[in-house]
Image (tube, rainbow, N blue to C red; front, side, top):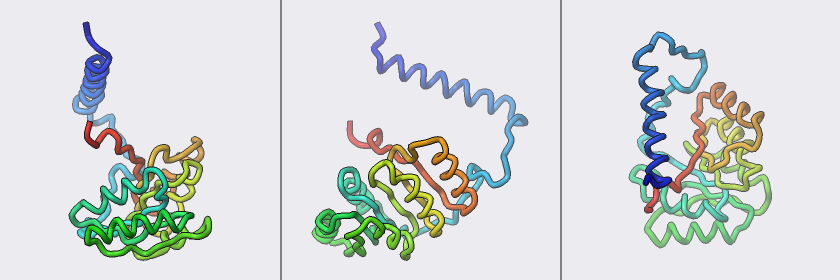
Length: 182
């Protein structure tokens, strides 16, 4: 008897096989719309400077993971509450990492983070703020990485796609649970 996990693995593989076989067999059917980000590659960033918005629930884990990646520096942290920001600053200092800039105290401080000197904004704020923050980050010239869900409505999804295409900044919806230890 097949368990649910084996069934899902099998159907996932069959779906991927079906999808890729049609692409490989008929590449002439592929078309790329001008402006689509699927064909865009941003220039490499050897020393990625990251700002994290929201260090209440998922944000602290993001700060911890990002700080362990070679070539990545958490240079700014924003949250409504100073205590949350300071806890992450302290965590980084204990590990010999540079102290990031701190943004806290009112609901618009995150905008200052987006406007500052960094490359990527990692958004782990409350869900209803994800899409507006992602849009603002890209409009400030930053790439955006947004915790799930990246948007609450179809209109917000289109807003993020259109902003990404217009600004030539990547916008990625994150889901890190599947990448950690089982």
